[in-house]
View 1 (cartoon, helix red, strand yellow):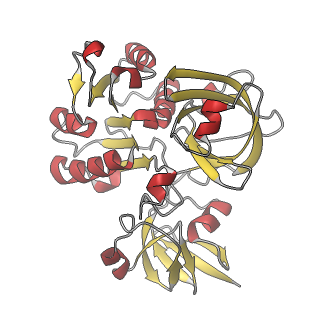
View 2 (cartoon, one colour):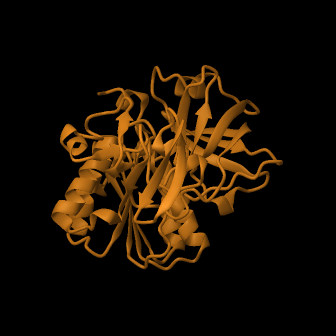
Length: 345
């Protein structure tokens, strides 16, 4: 059995198979819907059900509070239709543009610029052309079928020779995948992955000033977007805020400084929440999104791209819209939900 889903206001129609989620069917058929984690944890895919019935799989109440569900809101990543449906959702031009591929990748290099961060370059197979937008992510398929998501940290124009994607992986002690990366993974190992996924990438049809906001390894897709801006010759003003605990956590601080020196339109503002005495830190301190508010109390004419810990993304979205006048539709985010976050309830 299958059902028809119509997306308004775009008027796109697609088929959802029995026991398939709305989002999975949309991705399969190249329909660009907004989404992030695909696990009912981040709320990026929240949409309005206009007609029809769905049942929700497991999800977090913060992503879809009961009062929102009572108003007919759904999470397309875990909503399975039980009738034909009409859904109101912003379509994302470009999100379904490139085919989702399953492919092997070979570890080309493995560096550790910080004690708990690995920068891994994965060589892509020559016979498969992985196309993606700067800011999107891939999922690693583990031996037991579990999946782990990581954003590409290089723009598609910077794959190099041989073509390779760059990933920034933070060690989560006890983590099924990251324990392997930090323990046993070595050059020439093969990892299976699938992608591209995600609706987090630069909206290039705008001329608004850009705020790029990262915490920790949320810097990865932000770096890819910065490379895209530079390579496309985009002249919109860009301010990069990168928040970490201590200076050692700014694992590509030199790269960011060099990017700012090379791009007249880019301002780089590193922010430390817990600088150590030995850091000799004279820069900005505190919570990174609050530093943005101090610098840019009026965000009414900006676009914001935020990536990192869910608490940072949620705080930034709430405060930028409520206190700084940022239009809600101009906040684009990719919350890095860990397995712990996804099962936090």
